[in-house]
Image 1 (cartoon, rainbow, N blue to C red):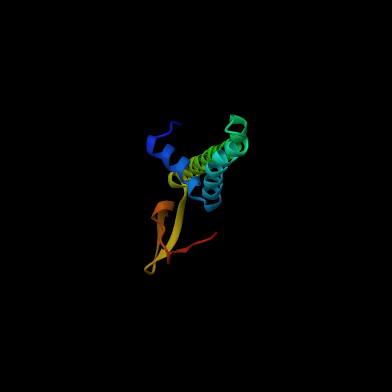
Image 2 (tube, one colour):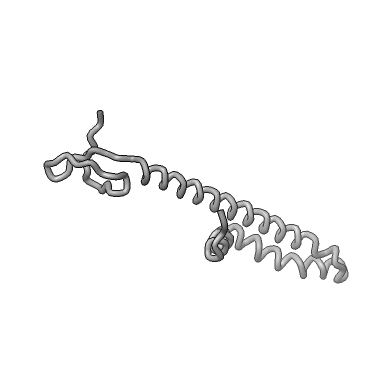
Length: 112
């Protein structure tokens, strides 16, 4: 299964809307110059901020992958039910055989 470009962006950017991740990103960008100032503008002062950004990146990638995997499983499940499930439904006083995708709210399914 291949990613479509829009799916990549949708899954990768969606976790970044989490307020906690936004706070962490802002904290990282504040921490980098403050840490460097406190360490006489040496690169080691930026390590805390960089570590926060790496953690945010890891969380975002893992969340994106999990969301993508869940959506793929959902699509597979929908295909299985759409192709195989038939139901006898009491609709408008008549029993009719319908596919899973044709069921609507208010249908009364006949259980055997």
